[in-house]
Each structure stands twice: as C-alpha cells, then as structure tokens.
Length: 414
Ligand SMILES: NC(=O)c1ccc[n+]([C@@H]2O[C@H](COP(=O)([O-])OP(=O)(O)OC[C@H]3O[C@@H](n4cnc5c(N)ncnc54)[C@H](OP(=O)(O)O)[C@@H]3O)[C@@H](O)[C@H]2O)c1
Image 1 (cartoon, rainbow, N blue to C red):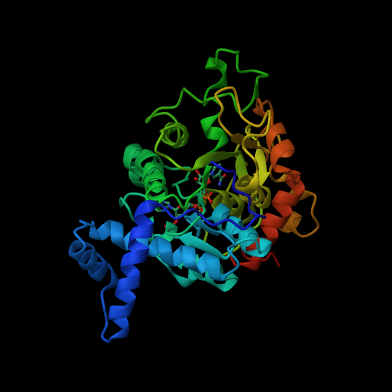
Image 2 (image 1 turned 180 degrees about the horizontal axis):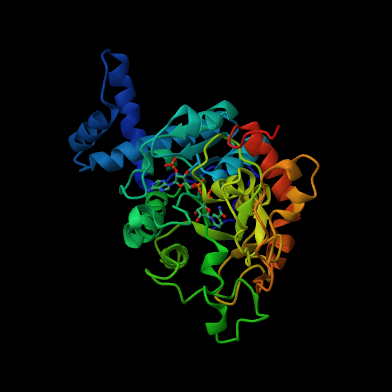
C-alpha cells in the first residue's frame, strides 16, 4: 500500500463494486432528469436488479456516500478528507483546529453523539462539518461520517476519574473496546478510501498501575513504546484497563489481511492546557478547575507526566503524514506508538500558578507531592518522528488557567 501524506493530494482508488455503482448511478441520473424525486439508493438497487445484480441497499447507500465524498475531493483539488471522532472533546477540538488551519484537507469532519451550541458550536464556527448520531455503542453509526475519508482520527472514549455510572464494564471498557472495533469496522467498510487511522490511546496503556510489580522492578524504569500495562483490572484502575484493551484490539484488527489501512497510536500522559469551548466535563478540564476555584484542599499527587493539549493535537495531525516505514519508528512488535509526556512527575501543578502575578491570588490548594515517586516516560520517538517540541508545565498551566477564565469556567479573581 502506498503511504499517504497530508501534503500530497490523495484520491483513493475506485474499487470494483464502486465502479459498478458509478455505472448504475449514471443510468439513474438520466431517469432522475426526466422528473420527480428519486430515492437514489432504492433506485440503484432496482437498477442493479434489472441488470441481474443483487445489491445490498446498505452497501449501495454507503458506496454512494463514498462516491459523493470522492467526487467532493476531486472537485476541491483532490485534497483528502479527514474525520475526527468525539470532536466535541478537549483533545479532539484542538486536533480539528490544527487540521483546519493546516489547509491540507478538503474537508475536516468531526463526530458527536449529539450536536449542541455548547459542545459543537465552536467546531462549526471553525468550518468543521459535524456529524451527529455517532455513538461508540451503536454499530455502523460512524459510516456516514467516514464515507470518502482518507484519514480517521479516533479520539472518542470516556475518560473520567470516577467510573461512569459506577459500572466499569459499561462505563469504560465497552465504549473503549467495542467502540474502537466499531470505528475500525466502519473505516474498513468505506470501500478502501480510508488509508490510515490514528488512535488516541494513553500512557495508561503503557505504564503499570503498580510499577513495583513490573518485572523490571518499576522504580527508575523508563517506560517506552515497548511497554504494555498488564496489571489493571475492572476493579483496579478500569480506565487504564479500557485503554490497554482498546489499543491491543486495534493492533489485532489492522493485522488482518483484509484491512486496507495502517495504524498510528498516540499515547499521551495527563493532558493540560487551554480549552476551546465552555464544556467542562473532560477530566483534564475539571481537574484544572478544581485547582483554581477553591474546591480542592490538596493537590492530587501527579506522579505521572503531563503534556500540553496543543502538543497532543499536533502529534495526531503529524501522525497522519509520517512514513510509518521509517527505520526505528516502530517498537519491537512493529507497532507505531508514540508516547507524549512533556513533563516528568512528581509534579506540583500549582507551582506555576503560585509564581504568577494573577493566579497566585486564586484559592489554590495545598501542595501534596512530597516523597512521591515519579513515573518516567521516554518521548524520544514523538520528538524524532513526529517533530514534537514539548511545552513546559508553566505554559500548560498558565495558558490552561487563562482559558478557563476566558470561557467562564472559573470566575476571575477580584
Ligand atoms: N485528557 C487526558 O489527560 C488524556 C490522557 C491520555 C489519553 N486520553 C484519551 O484522549 C481521548 C480524548 O480524551 P479527552 O480528555 O479529550 O476527553 P473528553 O473531552 O471527555 O472527550 C471524549 C469524547 O468522547 C466522546 N465519547 C465518549 N463516550 C462516547 C460514546 N459512547 N460514543 C461516542 N462518543 C463518545 C465524547 O463525545 P460526544 O459527547 O460529543 O459524543 C467526548 O467529546 C480519550 O480517548 C482519552 O482516553 C486523554
């Protein structure tokens, strides 16, 4: 398979069954011109039957959707179409912003379960095409959004400090694991148009919940893309479990012979930095808020690393264009994974706020990191192959805090 690049216009090849629908649609075109509204899919299926070809209506619908996407790409100088799942999210919003600003895509799409001015208004203002009704737990619900896409960036997955609904299987594992397989199946069913999927995994799929149980001793171990977290369960760190299971399933999925796209995986540490909307349900946003609004008595012991949301977004976008065959890019298992950890724990997230003339006046919590053992990650691959230059903790926290005030998530101190 030739390697896609976001700077090179790319049109997916028309496959055999697509060519058939083109022919059928051409016949249909003449009939439509004669007058009346026509259900294009039903008519294509009917025409196919007249030619002695049995065509599944669903297949016809999506092939026609694909054609519409492909034609759109041709009309608009053949730049590729990209779709970001969970576009309303904290990280995904920044991914969309960079994709739009790059000018390298004829269309930037984002999926959501439900559109609303608060959640998705900012995307539409940027010029992103938002597709509603895309639910990780509803099979096939991403097909429309992916039709004609060359790239899919799969960010959507629940990340909260508390288990959603108190049910780890339903709240974390099912949407992460079944949801990822649903998204990959939808990408696969786009008749060869999707050439690469970029998946948002996590450092939670890399480092162990209890590092001391790791065979290499844990303490002082520098986690790399060769590491896999193996010690989290439904009752102990289920979010971490969900991320590992989802990523492993994705690697297995793309290993199958009938899958036409490749996979690049982004593994961020805890993400901080500016928000793009007033939405505050993301765990990162909620956490930054508690540090500024007086609701936290003590800081959380951040032993793992942190990374700026803008660096995370840039890494997703750069992963679209990188040649995954580059020597040294993949881990020992031949997987393209990239750790993103800009700062190494233990971290006092409030230190930059205390040192700032404006935010030192906010009701900041007491520090709680003394004696904590930090988790060390290597981000060498992301630096070398994705060209990421990581922002420091001060930039993450100050820009994050300013944006929370700007969007009214935190009240400005008097
Ligand atoms: N934030 C971090 O520190 C961090 C660190 C490492 C990895 N990650 C990963 O990064 C990704 C994005 O996280 P985030 O922090 O940006 O979280 P977020 O703001 O909560 O975004 C997650 C998005 O997922 C979508 N989603 C959740 N459940 C869904 C479902 N059942 N069906 C369809 N969509 C669903 C939501 O979209 P709608 O509500 O619009 O449908 C939501 O916008 C996740 O995969 C997370 O595991 C985050």
